[in-house]
Amino acid sequence: MIYSDDARARMWADFENMGPAEVRKRVATSTFEPAAERLAREWLRHKEAEAAEDAREETIQSAREANEFARSAREIAGRSEAVALAANSAVLVANSLASSATTKAEDAAVLARQSANATRVNNRIATLALIAAVVAIAISIISLLAGRGELPSTPNRPANTPSNPGILSPSLVKFRRRRRAIRGPP
Image (cartoon, rainbow, N blue to C red):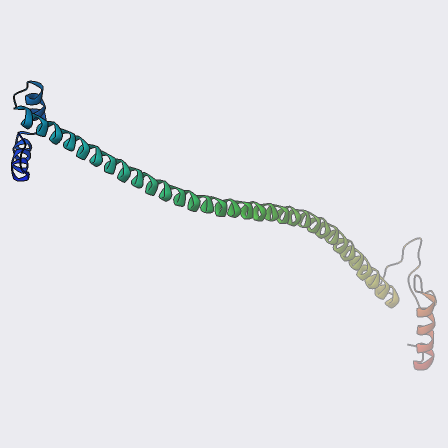
């Protein structure tokens, strides 16, 4: 028996209601009449083709999603590489700055040691200059006192008198003689 398109559509609607498992079972047990069985087999092939098409569409969609994920991953990897390169550059600059700072610190330490040594030398020179100044002041005081005759006499040195100037320098002696000549005797 050959079914009209209307009858065929009704049969396929019945097959849809039964579901593929039930239709396969009835085809296997030859429950349908031969024309209905041919329609059932055709309907099953159609369902398998639809299922294969759905599976193919799912596979294509999965492949598209996988490609999109791969593209995103590649973009992220590119950005990560750029960030890594920037970080590497920053580390190189930081290392360079640290090395430069270390060199400057070492130079500063050397200069500080040299400055400390120079300060010690300058302190020694200042101390010697102070000692020399004290000695000069003492000599000046002694010269002044000796010039006035205020120094006591000792066995080795007679008292300073106008006739015996003692330790006075020859120029001071000349100066005093001229002054006495101008003023007169005391």
